Amino acid sequence: LVVLGIETSCDDTAASIVRGNGEILSQVISSQAELLSRYGGVAPKRAEEAHLQVIDQVVQQTLDSANMTGKNLSAVAVTIGPGLSLCLRVGVKKARRVAGLFNLPIIGIHHMEAHALVARLIEKDLQFPFLALLISGGHNLLILARSLGHYVQLGTTIDDAIGEAYDKTARWLGLDIGKGGGPALEELAREGDADSVKFSIPMRQHKDCNFSYAGLKTQVRMAIESRNICIDKSPIFSANSLDRRSRADIAASFQRVAVVHLEDRCERSIEWAMKIEPSIKCLVVSGGVASNQYVRNRLNHLVVKNGLRLVCPPPSLCTDNGMGCGVMVAWTGIEHFLVGRYDFPPPVNDPEDYMYDLRPRWPLGEEYSQGRSEAR
Ligand code: ATP
Ligand code: FE
Image 1: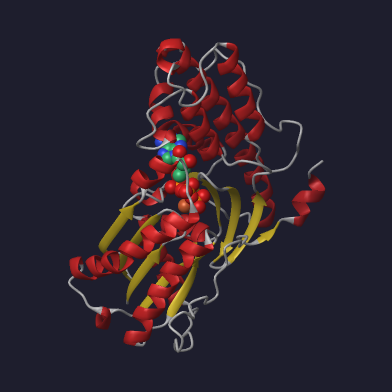
Image 2: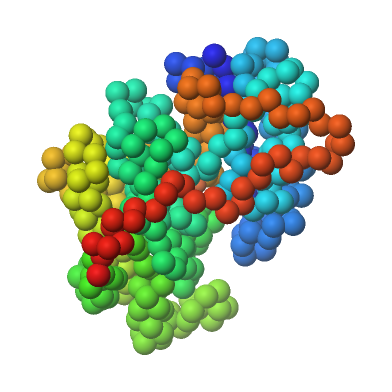
């Protein structure tokens, strides 16, 4: 079994070929990071153009470096949501073309499910059911994965995701965010005193598993303003800013509170999950923020204290701009293929007819209704 995975849900064009046993045969990514830093965010139309420019090349390179042609493939897996529909459809159109040419089945993939299931590629003995904390720039999810395709959403963010809070804080602190706000902030925070600035921990009075990072963001902004650091990319920033030590203190204090909030919710979700599936043994942590070493250490401590094991994919398989971004899609395709979940889409008569089952907004699993009544 050999599956080609294609991912274009946001700003990176990625593809990979993975064998049924989890062997990664090739992985290629074309990143738009430079384009994004020029325009200061993801502009859907520009992102679509960038995907269109490179998609054929990325897939061809993926085949070439695995020494394969389409004839060697068993199926094509492609992210169909959630994400920007203009971007998603570039990948879906390509997947349909390859599948049509070689008469292969297509497997439509949920991007966040792929973030969670890639943990089963690196830990072959990771069995369902397990808990998953998926933390990135756009998502903050606590999921109980009961079995393949059967997920219960224990919590989500009511405003921003933690990665967004890292990115904004990094930007406000004037960090060089070329490598991304999160890594830059993590680095600076190592130099700071995490107890020096008193930020309040979000949602302590809410007895649910949801997250909120908008309030913490505001507190950080106020702390910076009150210390007279210029917000954003002001040209006078460096002249008028606080010294590195003060900024490191803010970074460390922000990070501590951001992660205490994760710990609070994880601990409660373990309690809830144990009621539904007493046999869970693992908490999977994935998504871009899961590459943060401080986050990993703190969550590992919490998970072990609660008698579970932490499974955290390596950073290259956690982030969307890592090499493994296509790998997680191919692997999730393999998981579904093995239980017979795939499609042969109707032949494409009209070359523009590529709106095959796109799901730009697509919740992962059903909400935990009992949790709602337990929550205040
Ligand atoms: P999605 O929400 O659709 O998965 P995304 O675009 O946020 O997509 P990811 O690569 O999963 O993509 O996550 C990126 C986020 O992870 C960014 O907000 C980034 O700052 C954050 N991040 C990456 N590395 C670190 C780190 N070391 N510490 C903290 N945050 C990090
Ligand atoms: Fe992602």
